[in-house]
Image (tube, rainbow, N blue to C red; front, side):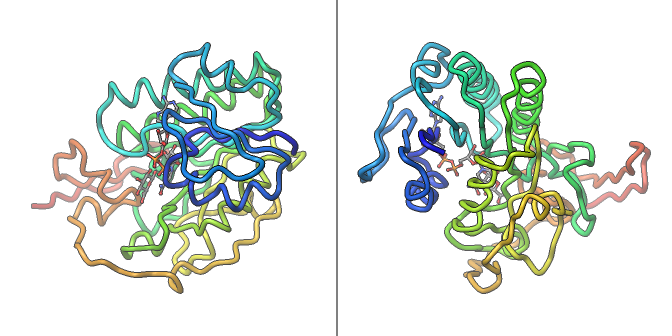
Length: 276
Ligand SMILES: NC(=O)c1ccc[n+]([C@@H]2O[C@H](COP(=O)([O-])OP(=O)(O)OC[C@H]3O[C@@H](n4cnc5c(N)ncnc54)[C@H](O)[C@@H]3O)[C@@H](O)[C@H]2O)c1
Ligand SMILES: O=C(O)[C@H]1O[C@@H](O)[C@H](O)[C@@H](O)[C@@H]1O
C-alpha cells in the first residue's frame, strides 16, 4: 500500500500503531483534531474534523487506504458519540467514496457484542449485542462499512478490538488484550488481503481465555505473536456483578437496573437472576 491515512492518529492506539505501520507504507498521513507527537520522515499531519464532510473529503485526497481510529473511545455522552462516531464514520466513508479510496480498516470494538455473557464463545457472525451508546456506535460503523462495500466496492476490515492498552491491567483485559504488534499485523491484513469485502474479526492476542471464535481472522492469515498473561500488570479494582457477568465489563453497568438477564439466539429469556 502506498499512501495510507490514519484518522485519530494522535490518540492512544494511533500512537502505538504508527511506528509499526509507517515502515510498511510509502506514506502515512495523520488525520486528527490535534497534532500527534514526533512526525516520522514519511508522515505528515492533516488537521481535520471528521464531523465536517468537506474537511474529511479534503483529508483523503490521493489516499489509497485508511485506518479509521478517530472518535470517542468510551462513554455515554450520546450527543458527543453521535457526532464523532456516528456522523464522523459516515463522513469518513463518504469521503472515501468521493476520493475513490479502496480500503478502510475500521477500529470497531468488543463493545459491539459486550452483552454476551462471559464464558460464551461469540463469533463475528452472531447478532450484535451492544452494551452502551458507545457500543451501539461501533455497530453503526460496521454497518456503514457493509453499505459502502455494497454500493461502492470499498473493502473494509472491521476489527472488534478487545483492549489495546499498553499492557493488560485487569483479569478482564488479560482475556481480551491485543498487543500493538498483533494489532498492527491485523491492520496490515486489513489494508491488503484480496478476499476482504466487509469483514468483521475480533482483535485479540494469543489469549488463554478465548471469548471469541476468531477463525475468520486466522483464515486471513492472522497469527498473533503475544500472550496477554506474559504482559499483565494487574492493578486491582474489583468488578461488580453486572460487569462480571458480561464480556463488556463496566460498560454494561451504564443505565443497568441490576437485574441480570440472559437470552438465547432466538431472543428468548434463558433465565432471570436478580442481583443486589
Ligand atoms: N483503546 C482501546 O482499548 C480500544 C478498544 C477497542 C476499540 N478502540 C477504538 O479504537 C479507536 C482509537 O481508540 P483510542 O483509545 O486511541 O482513543 P483516543 O481517545 O485516545 O483517540 C481518539 C482520537 O480521535 C480523535 N478524534 C476524535 N474526534 C475526532 C473528529 N471529529 N475528527 C478527527 N479526529 C477526531 C481524537 O482527537 C483522538 O486523538 C477508537 O475508535 C476506539 O473506539 C479502542
Ligand atoms: O473494553 C475495553 O477494555 C476497551 O474497549 C474499547 O472499545 C474502549 O475504547 C476502551 O476505552 C476500553 O478500555
